[in-house]
Image 1: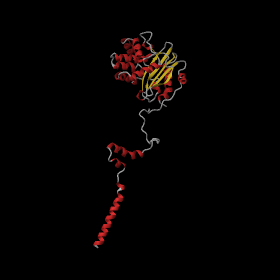
Image 2: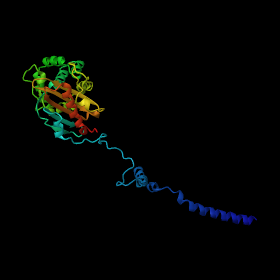
Image 3: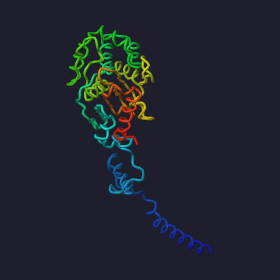
Amino acid sequence: MGKVSGVFLLVGLCLGAILAMLLVPSSRPGPSAVAVAASDAEAMTVEAGPVESSRPSSSAAPSSPAPSKSADPGKPPATVDAQTLAELVPDGQVSIAVYDRVAKKTTVSLKSERSYTSASLVKILIALESLQAGTPSATVQRMLSVSDDGIASSLWTAHGGPAIVTRWAGRIGLSGTRPPEDPGRWGDTRITAADIAKIYRYLLDQVSAGTRATIMRALSGATENGSDGIRQYFGIPDAVGDLPWSIKQGWACCRGSRILHSSGVVGKDDRYIVVVLTSQPSSTTYPGAGRRVTEVVKALLPALGAP
């Protein structure tokens, strides 16, 4: 029995060795073993090989692509028919400029070089001059948010009157902006839609952070009624719905026409600069003229990425 046991033991050992040899390949490391003698960086590259080969090829669409950093999350702007816009102000004049700050281009322009009296839009230039001269922010903000004519007149006189317009027109490059013929009538400053759009671009992109914050806080906090009781939510505020806005409105009457202007920025991160200038028959009421301006801005909504 001892010899037989020895034989069985010998056979068992041989079978164990054979089985061990057969099992070794299944336990070998993969491609990284090829790089054992190479540097650490080379080993990592080799190890990445099987992972890369298991991903979809570049021609296959990924299941959940990461959004492009430059992509606009909103609806892409659409074109707007200029003739339709003009017909929304019958018996009057309308000029429009829309500037897309992401695309860095004017997307809507209708007679944007036509000249109008500024009414209260010139208060933005008065604000720039006054803040530079050290006027308290609260004073400037009130002038803008409630469109206070008394404050505007005081600051206009204190800081040079017509020279304010001349200085800032030269600094910003406003080709169609002129001081009023009567030095005391700041509301008769001559402007164009193209120039007002340039003023907003300058305000948003070039002035100091403190000046920009003061003015934009006032424009985003514009009250529904101006200091003279005129409702100033016509145009942009009434038209754009839930889109964020900051505005400076203008109105004047009645030496031959009723002036209503709506200007400001609309959308996330102040993307769109919107300027609508109108001169309407003096027989039109402020509410009626305001509704026309609102309809013009509503017609611009496709250009603002809105439905």
